Image 1 (cartoon, rainbow, N blue to C red):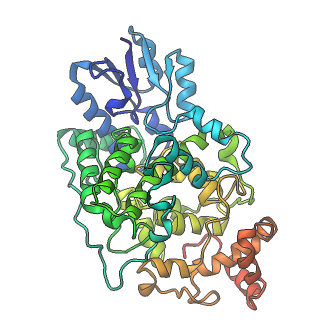
Image 2 (image 1 turned 90 degrees about the vertical axis):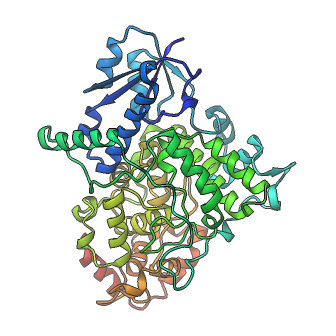
Length: 489
């Protein structure tokens, strides 16, 4: 049996052909020298890799080195590797002559996605998701979707309950750091001190699973205790409750500690047993076999140059205060709190990412490729395959509609409806010009004005574009936002 080379995002048992298969694990220091990652992301990845090595014991050869190549070339054993998650890693595997196997850790096979995608005028997640439900027999009652509808998203968009600062759900199982975590922290301190390796954000206690046991405990607890409220409030934001009822499992899936299909099966079983309502079960399953698989396949289906897409000609650099997570420089309460969440945890959930961080960047015309790279480095669950379509295509609309039907742009009214941020903010979401003008409200109209030529033909933007021309203070608004420039709001 060949020795299986496991990358640090292939750490679950489903990446082995046999539980006793010999393994090669490599900790590459050069990875952290090339990019400035969040300190807590670096800790999580190294902790997960070293925990896996400790679990495997003599079954694994574990090597700490500068580069992958120097270790692989020195190996006497024949090696095989499951398809990596980035083009750069795949090219490395091919250069080294290692046997390349099909990908694992996703639900729909690449050839099935290609068959589905070829010849379509537009690639839409909802269409792919319905095909995946049927193909894999998930949440199906015969030939029909469970409950008679494919998508229950309309029931999963509730704002937070009035007057609460925290959603009434039990905390997820606590993570307990061990000697491996302590050694990782000492090594990262030394790398910073002696090797000049830099990190982003703050160090802090490990908040996310680094072992399969931790990930399974989080998954089971989520399905039993948190999933019932996940669906209704998955788009809500609360300043005092960054986690709400979210699973906190994205990093575990992206490290390969969990197979998404096992989470899908556990969730569907809970629905069939009557323990979870259909909207919550469907919403979580859609994230796994719909959105997660969709962005994975788009990464490989689109041309390599896709990540440089910039159809809206957004050329402004990401300002230092944003890039370096200087939340204290920001007065806008929503943006300050979300940036602080990234700084302190390396994680915020999908709506702050899309509608606070991404929305602000798109409104200001920051470079989409730079934003994709920033999300990759700043988030514990960020990888190139995750962020390319999510940021370039969806968040920044830089592909002009190849995978999303309209820009995810909004003014302060959306944030006001879906959060408790605006009540304590110095800006007013209803004001677009003047000292109290909300930077999101003003930025929204400035974005439409700047990109009118590109957006005019989009039927989903017809109503906003009509509203743009009814503004009597548009010239003053554009002048105000031009003067704001890259300053922190």
